[in-house]
Length: 74
Length: 466
Image 1: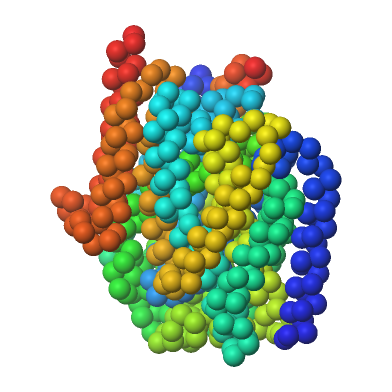
Image 2: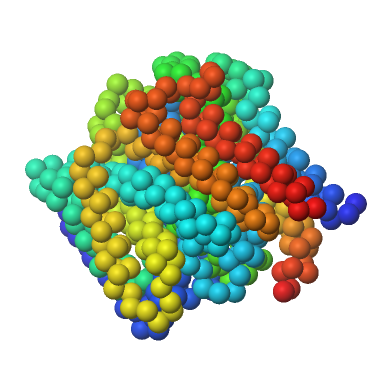
């Protein structure tokens, strides 16, 4: 897959994460189940999706700097 | 506790003065003073970015915010910050490219260059001045209120506030941005350690992780989901907050400056990821402290809760560290903001490398005094005031993004629309304009409308020139 497409996929995944986090399914009023490691749904899901975003940032940084390597050399 | 506080405080101020003295010797040009030499590596970059981002509102505001509004506070801040660090990758690259190799003169000057219109810079500076001064003020007020509750009948709020501003001014005026950056590293480390010690103590007291949420469920189950017991964390509030927080590195000069002065793009991208992890490590314990507060301080006032959990329940030495940590947090955020505004003025006045820095120092002093006055009259709702500040500056985001991303002439449309949006936002907060537009919260509507306008502007410009 070309670097540009990988970058686009990562950006799309970030938008997807935001759409999921703010979707009515996740922000459903008074939704506490299922619990994970003792945490209510809102908290553990929030932590997991935030962690995913940070990992996408790490991956995105790698891909983006390779994509723009010519401009960065300048 | 006073003995511990005096000893730790003296060590802390001694370290600050040492940094200040060392960096003062290295200052040869105005760039050294305003931009710290502009070669920041990953570790220092992480600490200075995180310390500037996190302030008293994190250590004081977030536990109280989650005590009142529940675990949705995580989405409000941590998730929004995680989105923000991704934007840094992209925005940081183009901002650095736009800023070029010449010394960075601040966002106001950059916007004037991008738009070929002086009004763009002045509008940005007005928004930053209007909404950052209250933010600096709440740092000062937050720590002053806390010190009053730690030492009642000793020094009044205004006395502590003046003390904070004085130390901040002496320190930053002597050592410049480099000294501030070193102090940020110290503060970032202190904040992380202190917040986790308090959180572990809370978990021990309540009986462990699982018990924490079980007990919260028996007291008020609404705290374990959105929108929380008072219904604040609605989808619209969370989305508007995410957009406002997403725009922080774009619109707030103290953070955009840090993106430009990183050594290179590799350091910047690693710093962005590290900030993401740091955010999670700092916010999780504030949620724990908040949940603990919901159990033991359900009906207490903010001051009673914070005084109890951060001072009365802690060992005297830890309490002294917490006070110094809060003081450091307030200092690092406020002096960075004051300094960044000084740099904006430098850009607007088009001062050269070897020009006298006295006007800038005077302007920084004036800003500090404005913040001090505001701190004496502002309210105690730190998180909501901080959010107001984020939203106000976020309105400049679309104009900046268009300016930075588009290479083509952009006309005045975005400048006029951003000015109008700022005016409506101010009127809305003064209660002279509806709080909702077409069933959207006014700030969300304005952000979406400006975002759309910037996108259309970008597409139309490109089409016209192709």
